[in-house]
Image 1 (cartoon, rainbow, N blue to C red):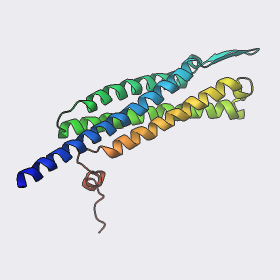
Image 2 (cartoon, rainbow, N blue to C red):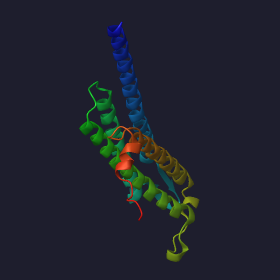
Image 3 (cartoon, one colour):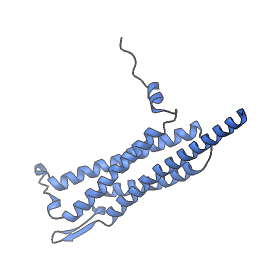
Image 4 (cartoon, helix red, strand yellow):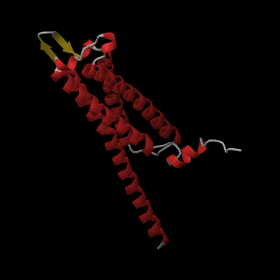
Length: 185
């Protein structure tokens, strides 16, 4: 009877581990698809009119956005493959995933933030330095760039969920407890 309970417990634990591994793998693949979508939108984003031609490569912030999305897509694929391989979870593996997830979160957040700033200037202009609103002349370009930036911020949210769901110490509450502020006194 006890042996059957242990076997059933081990089977349930294996099913649970397999389901968690599948969920983590899928959660790591979602940002890859989103990054590729944002990357493709920006790569194909160009507009020509009477004022000239405009493409993502004309603006450093958008080049950074494209590169950051490419790096994040590659990392997401690689980390999904590693997460899908059945092997025991170790503390060093958990820390590696956690730290790389943090780094990629900040890389893609920075790309989204700087691109948002450029889009703000493109929509509003800056009269103090005599910049006019470029989106009046390049509306299609601006709409596509705004869509790519919005998708990038969804990627940021995905990486935040990944970082929150896989802290190295088993639970985010216990990890944060280690870094609690000292008591006032």
